[in-house]
Figure 1 (cartoon, rainbow, N blue to C red):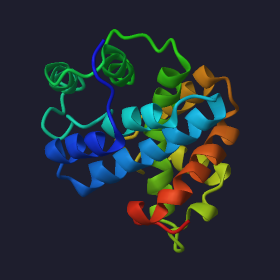
Figure 2 (cartoon, one colour; figure 1 turned 60 degrees about the vertical axis):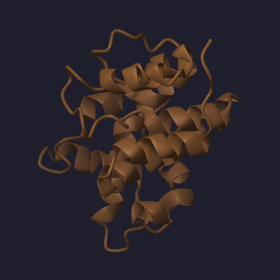
Figure 3 (tube, rainbow, N blue to C red; figure 1 turned 135 degrees about the vertical axis):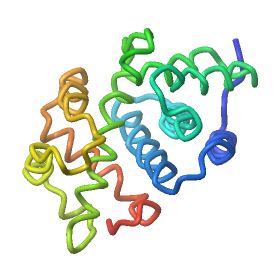
Length: 189
């Protein structure tokens, strides 16, 4: 069994490999959403948060499906981190071969794309406020293929389904989870 990771170690690892403000904000959003999911599941918010923070830490340097998230997994292995943490991170990539067979892994898949999409929706609102992001607005933007085109809408829908929650309920809960870090995301709560 490898070592566990603290929030500070996860942040240091993230910022060692990621310079892009957009990717850093995404990591913070997914961390916040994962902490909220952990609280609902009665699980360890520190572990779930670290997984959220690190899920894309290798993406800037290794953006292809052939490399991401496998390069990051190798970095974590070399540094002696727990195999469970590594598999949790790998599970968010549908092509990694790691099953989404735990509540954490289902949650990571479910909040990853949605966190980014909700952030994008809030950024185009005049108020830039998460309070103005309603499920109907998110669903409407999901139909606009030119809006936030890099976000996989199918993953958003499938993620909620895998969690066994209504998509509107999931959108509301993720938007609420982002409010405490709104300032870090360039948004208003």
